[in-house]
Amino acid sequence: MEFYVSAGPGTEAVLRDELCELGFKSARLNSGGIPFTGKWEDGWRACLQTRIGQRVMVVLGRFAAPDLEGVYDSVAEVNWGEYLTPRHTFAVSAYAHESTRTNPNIVALKAKDAIVDQLRHEFGERPNVDRENPDVRVFVYWARQKATVYLDMSGEPLFKRGYRSLGGEAPLKETLAAAMLRLSGWDREMPLVDPMCGSGTLPIEAAMWAANIAPGLKRERFGFERWANFNDAAAERMRLLRGEMRRIAHGKLPRVTGFDIDDSALSAAEANAKAAGLRLSFRKMPLRELQPDNTRRMMVANPPYGIRLDADNALYQELGAAVQRLRGWRIAILAGSPRCVQCIKQTPVETYPLKNGAIDCRLMIYEP
Ligand SMILES: C[S@@+](CC[C@H](N)C(=O)[O-])C[C@H]1O[C@@H](n2cnc3c(N)ncnc32)[C@H](O)[C@@H]1O
Image (cartoon, rainbow, N blue to C red):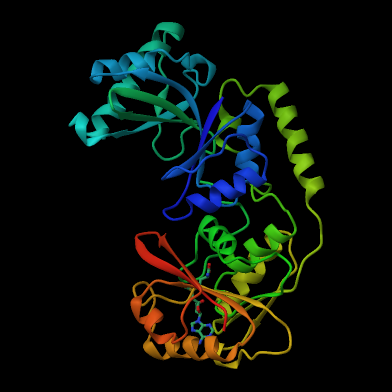
């Protein structure tokens, strides 16, 4: 089987590294996401284990499709009865390369017709479309006269780990936090500090990574667990796989600490860590009080951007001063504003362009 794990902009290389480390075969660098090959169970395992991937999709087929009728015929080649019956709901989305001069919604409609026609012919009834929470999500990619038909195995996007019920004011997506941690060069052993932890996403993702806790373990179910072919035998194999994931987690954690000035953010962080099964230390402290000691630490920070939060230059200046005084530390700051970068007078040792939602960011790494 061929799988494709989608990645946020700028996270492709670390996603490829993660998938290779997890033992997925032929994972290679590609813009937008990383393909790999394997058996069905490898797709399930990717849903459970990728921290950085946004969705895991399986390729059902690639077909010649010179025009819209070709797209219909391509989708009709798939045996849809394996995945859904009239009792299931489904949704189709599509990408159409600009050379097709076709609105992607029209492509999705055509694909939907092909699925409905096939199932009506087979069962005498058709399944309903549900855009919000479908059992089966189909994606059609149409470019260069070829249509590729994918099924989304994840269901809800993978940043929804199932441990965060409370967000702060501008919570990071868990998948972006995980990508940031890997890009930061953290060795998973150095004590880690997030001085502006908000709802705790970075400390929680760091601890889960360090303790080898599969990020998907708290998810009630993935998309593929709602498909027609996910029978009792498959459910038993998935139960065993979850058990295996629980066994490879270990309790060894470096010291992971989160600070913030906002009481409600700290309560959210505590509740979220507890829901993730972790005991982490969260405490009220302003950034200006963070002082160096004789220990080399990793600091990760996601300061407010001034777009979504009322950030001011004073805070960025405090951040600049912290980078100056935390000698011997390694520091990774997700800067979403040029003002933030300007206030830090040190030269970064590495920078990585990332996107936080629609905001262009830079992950700046310092070694003061
Ligand atoms: C963008 S949010 C962090 C979001 C967090 N990464 C999450 O996923 O929930 C920035 C945080 O910085 C905190 N903050 C603002 N000024 C601070 C200061 N001077 N010292 C410490 N924390 C501060 C805010 O309370 C807010 O929770």
